[in-house]
Image (cartoon, rainbow, N blue to C red; front, side, top):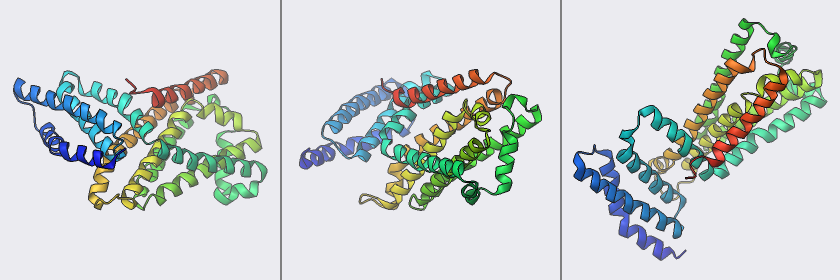
Length: 314
């Protein structure tokens, strides 16, 4: 890329982009304004293609992409119900953002799953190591909870566990995102800590022989739940980067540039945790044979991967 060509390209079109950004905020009145907005959108799409060819900075391309999406929604969105727009946005925009933020998402995965593996191995080999992170009372409670298959529990037990896991996972996801305000360090800490806790629980239950019961319960909703936590952590890392690495912007400008990305990641996390809660309440503790539950869980892994890797590629 020739930096001079890129700078000239941005200078020549910046005023038009800014005018279009103001225009899309106002309501469209009449066919003439709609036609003008459509011309601006077509020109912007051509500019976006040229910006990618010139290899402009990622934040500039994201801003143009977001603007093109808002103009498109202003032109064509009224034809759809709000609920349909929201579903389409989740279907397309969230997976696009996950792929655009691939490095942060991979880091969040590593920060959660690598400590989980380490914690599981440590707890499996030594009860003393398990008690460093979880108290003996907590480990005993886990043993009692998973001493029997999920379908042997009472309806009251299932309801109590459902409420506990929903509140617990929402809290974890919120902390993984919100603590990113401390330069991303809070998100790193909570991803690592929760990964260790998850791993210790799995390793301890494997050592005492209750792991099959745990897997039966979590297999159906685990892919949605854990990936939602990962996306929350990635959004927190994005927040931390916007604060620490401003690329010459003011703090407000850096946060404004990062906000569309964070909103998509957090929305995706919220949707995934909601799906996990529904599956957990209606399926995970139901009296369905274990092989069917494990098979259903494998299907959910495929569904999550297909959505995040294939959504919005039109």
